[in-house]
Each structure stands twice: as structure tokens, then as C-alpha cells.
Image (cartoon, rainbow, N blue to C red):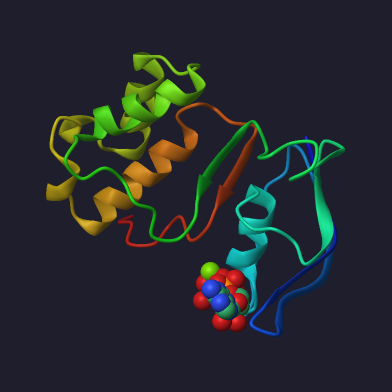
Length: 162
Ligand SMILES: Nc1ncnc2c1ncn2[C@@H]1O[C@H](COP(=O)(O)OP(=O)(O)OP(=O)(O)O)[C@@H](O)[C@H]1O
Ligand SMILES: [Mg+2]
């Protein structure tokens, strides 16, 4: 998989929050974005996820133009800042409901992801009773349970224990 960001500019309220960003992310690698608060890391991830439209430039996912040829990267897991989970459901059901969209993940995939993040023992507890870190773990499970090729993780370690 290749994520090719080409000359991407996003203007908000008269200011360029992304200003001609170009970078090619190649499959099989882990990339980290670092920079000052407000420098545009989250915005760049939103751009790659197809959640914002460019003012100029484009994102290509495996050569296909986002918002033109495809609406979203079709094999993506994502955590973007303060994700809302469904608080009235338990952890298992949160993932079960999400799995109805793509219809690729089995109950085993869900349990495996919950096990991986350390929530398996509390999977039947309503998410509204979870601590901040437990919710973050569920957000991570949500991103990985369908084994996507592209994982976009914005501040994934927020509130996590060791
Ligand atoms: N809805 C909005 N309207 C106008 N400007 C915005 C909006 N959302 C974000 N910005 C601006 O876009 C810039 C980039 O924000 P972004 O959230 O991408 O920063 P960041 O690098 O992720 O910061 P942090 O390290 O704090 O997470 C910031 O200067 C911010 O003020
Ligand atoms: Mg950010």
C-alpha cells in the first residue's frame, strides 16, 4: 500500500493549516509524526483518512485519488482524537455493531482484539462505566480488529497504563 500526499494545502479561516505538504508513505512501514502543538499532525491524518477536503493538492491511495476515485481508503483503521464510542453498549457489542459495516470481522477477531488490548475480562461491561484509559484501549481495539492494511493512530497512547 502507498499513501501519496501531494502538495496538500488546507485553508481554514484564511490560514493554511497544511501548506503544500508532500510525502509518500510506503506500505510495511511505521511512521511517526512529531511537531509542535497545532502544527497540523491531526489535520494531516484527517486528510489521509478522507475526513477533510483539500483546498489544493490531493491524496492518492494506491494511485487512486481520494474524494474522486474513492471516498475513503478502503482498508483503514483509525483513531482520531476523542473518538466517540457507544456508551450504552459493552465493549464486545461496540465492535460487533461496527463489524456490520464491512462484514469481514468474526466474533473471534473481536475477542482477539479485546484480548490484545487487555479488555477481554471487562468486555461485557457497559462502556459508560469505563475509565478514560479503558475507553482508549477500546478505541485501539476498534482500529485493529478488522486487521486493516492502513492504521492511522492519532495519540494512541493517551491515558494508557504501562
Ligand atoms: N475547525 C478548525 N478551524 C480553524 N482552525 C482549526 C480547526 N481545527 C484545527 N485548526 C487549526 O489547525 C492547526 C492544526 O491543528 P492540528 O489539530 O492538526 O494540530 P496538531 O499538530 O495535531 O496539534 P496537537 O499536537 O496539539 O495535537 C492548528 O493551528 C489549529 O488551530
Ligand atoms: Mg493532534
